[in-house]
Image (cartoon, rainbow over the protein chains, first blue to last red):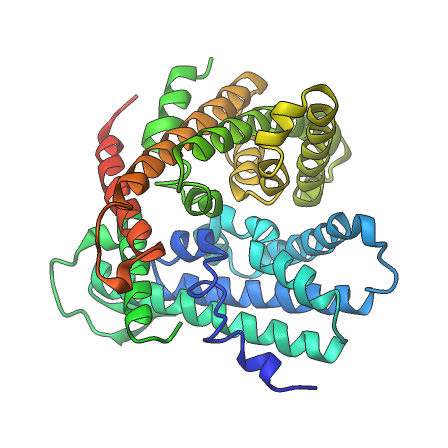
Length: 197
Length: 193
C-alpha cells in the first residue's frame, strides 16, 4: 500500500482542474453547495465501489470485452444510488435531476477503471479511488461555493446560513449557465498562475 | 398532437444541449480546436443521437414498461447505445473505408458522450415524448450540438492568433469563450413557443 496513490488524485492530478474530465456535473449542478455535496457523495460511492469490484474481478474479466463489463458494473451501482437518493432525499433527487443517472458516463469513473483498477491490487485501488473522489469533491464544492456566494449572495447548507446574506442584489448570472463557464475558466487560470496544476 | 416545431426550436436554441444543459462537454472542449473535426464529430453525434432516440424509445415502451422493469433503464440504455455504436463502426468499416478513416476515431468516443444518454433519458422518463416527438428531439438536439461545436471551433481558430496572458492560454480561454457564447444563447430563453 502506498499512500501517494491517495494524495496524487487530490491536487496534482485533480480530475476536473488538471485533466478536464467530468465537466458536465461540475458545471451543471454547482448552483448550490448543497447539490455539490450530494453529487460528491453519490460520485464517491460509485467510483470507489465500482473500482473495488473491477479490481477484485480483474482476473475473471476477459480483455476483449472489458469495457462493456466495466460499464455494466458502473451502471448497476448508479441504478442503486439513484433509487437510494430517490427514496431518502426527494429534494436532492430533484435538484441533481438527470445528472444522477449520468454518473454512468462520467469519464473519470471509466477512466480510473481502465487506467488503474484493472491493473492494481484492491487496496491500492481503494486509495486511488478515494483520492480521486476527494479531488472531485474539492473541485465541485469550490466551484459551487463561488457560484452560490456571488449568485445568491449567501451560502446555505441544510438550513444553516454559513455565509449570511451580504447583498440584496446578487449577480444572478452566476447561477445561469454562463456563470458556470466563467467561474471554472477564471478558477483554472488562477490555479495555472499559482502553478498549482 | 405535440408541438413538434416547438420541440425542435427548443432543443436547438432555447435549451441548447451544450450551452444550457451542460451535456456533451468533453467533445465540446476536446474536438473544437479545428472546424473540420468539429463538423465531422457533430454529424456523427447527430446520427447516433437520432438512432439511439428511436431505439431506446422502442425498447423502453415495448420491453421495459410491459415488464415493469423501468428501473433497469440506465443499464439497458447504455447497452443499446454501446452496441449501436459498435455496429455502426463495423458497418462503416466494411462499406466505406474513406468514411471510416475520417469518422473512425470519433465513434468509440460517442458511447461515453453523456449527451446521448441524456437525450434518451429525457425522451422517455423525463418528458415522456411519443415516438415522433422523441425522433424530432433527437435530430434537433444533434443540430444544436453541431451549432455549438461549430461556433466554438470558429472562435477557437481565431483565438489562436490572439496573444492572451500565459495563465489563460488553452482551456481557461476556451471556458471564457464558452461563457460568452452561453451568455448569447441566454437571449433565446425569452422566446415563447
